[in-house]
Image (cartoon, rainbow, N blue to C red; front, side):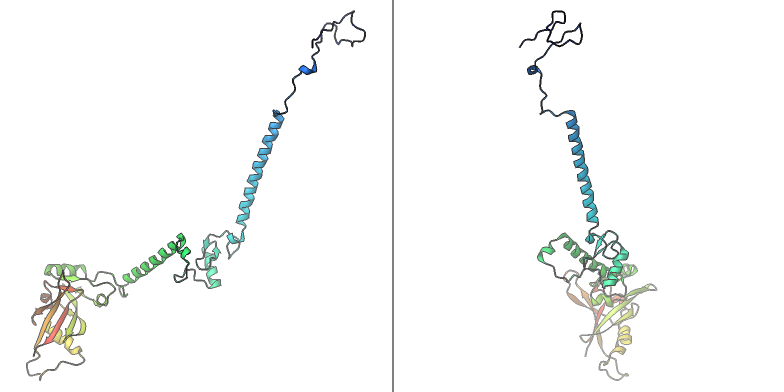
Length: 301
């Protein structure tokens, strides 16, 4: 379609509208050539609206998260079961009560008479045994037993004495004399009977006496005493039934003394003959004993 200019002048058609200006030309463009605005392309206003909607959604999500967190904090199971005010931090291993502090934990034990310690004898299912918390509880229980044994061992009067049985000075003297002292197990009764000590440059030994095949007594003997004097003056008076002997004016009993010595490698017992007039220090030279000396006494007819 062609357009024609409208000449503004005297020869214009009487039905045509008057021009706005006498010196201008108006070009008429058909409507079919005017480009239409596409509805698919968002305008700037629509983009702003979309951005606002996204921001509103993000704000709503954040508010919902904050609300959920606050709801969890207000959960009754998350509060202290004693004061019901503060958030709980600790769980009782016996009754699973939730507490927030040491004070509330003590009040819980006082109110419910709860021991607050897990009972090792409580039945556990097979699935619970593989849970890390149960493994940690078993480990703590074993450690508590070890700590109890260590405390008892540190007690000099306790049954599980683990301190060295011999003084350092006694060990030095034994090394110089060739005497080997093998320590008995700490839990054994022999270790508990050993009360040997060092005094005035000599050793006061705990000596076990075996008379006629039976243990007679365990007494402390000064190492400067002779074997004969120690037995006759300290052991014989303590016997409930004295050995048969002749009149006091007659020659006394003929006694034979042996020291029980251990073989270092085979741990077998060897009886070392002792002279009645030998001192205890001389009798123990180059021997091997278990914790303290054992002297065997026999009557020779």
